[in-house]
Image (cartoon, rainbow, N blue to C red; front, side):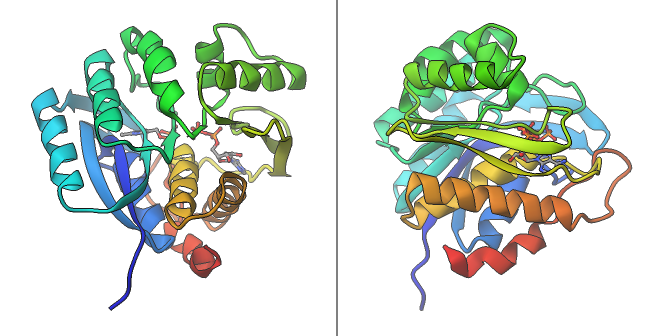
Length: 270
Ligand SMILES: Nc1ncnc2c1ncn2[C@@H]1O[C@H](COP(=O)(O)OP(=O)(O)O)[C@@H](O)[C@H]1O
Ligand SMILES: Cc1ncc(COP(=O)(O)OP(=O)(O)O)c(N)n1
């Protein structure tokens, strides 16, 4: 018998399997972590876009949290698609109730195809109630702009935006650079102890990037669940997401998913 680290995914389902809960489960599986799930919304989605979605009633979100915490020993958790203010508030209440403190918040707002995954009415609650609970928040550039409320145009803006997000209560912040148009991809990291650095690599030329944010945040959560430090977890997550993009698979006709099998080679590193 082996002991395994147990983690929690709080997010939406992607029927196409490339992003959302499905990307999170595949990532955690590859990283050697047992994943439990609170499904907040179900999307009818593929690599071409989001065709439909349904929010899960609050009573069933509560029931999923209760079932999980009655049985499992959750070491870390992540949030993804939280749909609207009602669902987000319910998730916040449960994070507090079950004292989840190793929490990674991926403030998912819009899918790459343009579909909204978080209603505008939830942004204030996200900033005021969810970010203060986050150990790490991982916005992409457009999400960071919504959170800070202004355009981010250069490196200095990115660093200032990370400081503002930290001031909102998230202990550590990564502003992801996948949406930039530069030749090299740069993610900016601001840690709780004020250490800051860029994680930089070649931009991989591909349209198979569906689920990159989910994969990064789940790999970080996996490393946290196994007891690693925030910096170790972030560096590990970046390595995982790069590898899963680099060794792409040919699935679907649009923005294809990542290759989560490629992450298995890192399993024993954490
Ligand atoms: N084309 C790419 N080549 C290499 N890394 C990438 C590429 N696109 C995204 N990434 C990495 O994937 C992660 C997610 O980035 P991003 O696409 O900005 O987030 P999201 O999926 O939330 O929109 C980041 O670590 C980013 O650096
Ligand atoms: C159900 C669901 N959750 C999250 C996303 C967004 O995932 P992300 O990793 O940001 O990847 P893209 O969709 O931007 O490629 C999603 N699409 N669906």
